[in-house]
Image (cartoon, rainbow, N blue to C red; front, side, top):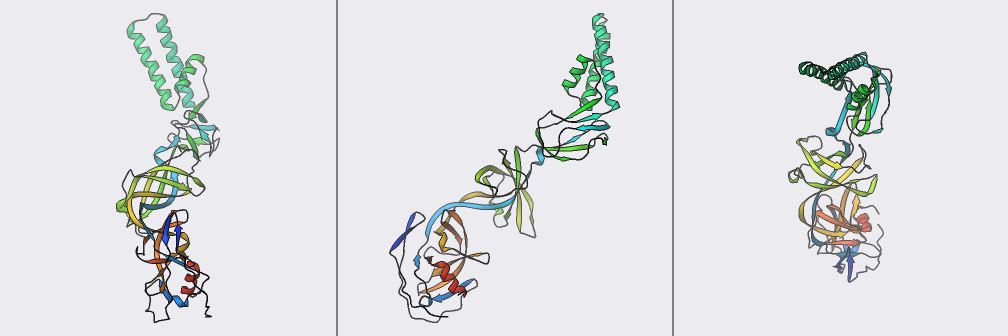
Length: 365
């Protein structure tokens, strides 16, 4: 390797991420024997480093929010999904709503032709005529009560079949038999699945459509086993979706799985998310669950070197050597990272020129 004899520039101080850090200059010693570094830690002496300039500084120690990261996907809230089923047998002559359609509670979804429904309408009209006749003839109270009971039973049979109060009132007023029973939406929501096509026959209890209320969704996330004991039901969190990077969504922990996933060593948790209409099931989402405060070391993001899915800092030792140290970091603010593990507060790190030093230490150049 060609050795460059370039001057090292040391500055007196610089502000990093909103605070002042003293930049310290260290005279370059003569080359000396270096002990074998530990795993994920490479070392070289200062006089072997060639760069236009570099700056060393101490990290800033600060109390920050202790946040457990979550990653996962959104899903329909199963507590607000409904199967639309037939209460009588018949033929689906028409379907009014298909997959993806937004429907309101009570909105007609399909028209069902059923001889049983036609028979029930006839019985209701007969009971209604009998009741009106007895009311007009001033029959005995016992006969009038019997006629009213028969009428109420005929109305109840219509309700059991799925007829609405409006359907029953319209029949009694118009006295016209309708061939089709309108199957209506039990909730407001979106059509997520349709099982039958127009013209299909359906039996009692068969479901032909699924609806979901999307005003709230479920977020299924995963946390590592070392973090799950700090999570409690009801804890609030803010959700972020990659497709909508400028928005935050309020959520809270709803359910914690009773068992760990043995393959990933993670615990599955379910969170309830308030949907303003922009979220969709199956979207990938991330969240930060605040579990208190903790001490962390803040460093410039430029000081962090990423290599082979790992994060490193270049640490300057008191004897003038430089070691590549694997650390656990996470973003803190714009241009600033928080070191959670792997660094002490009294250790200097290279905050300028770290990328070049990392290349030298790893043998890339």
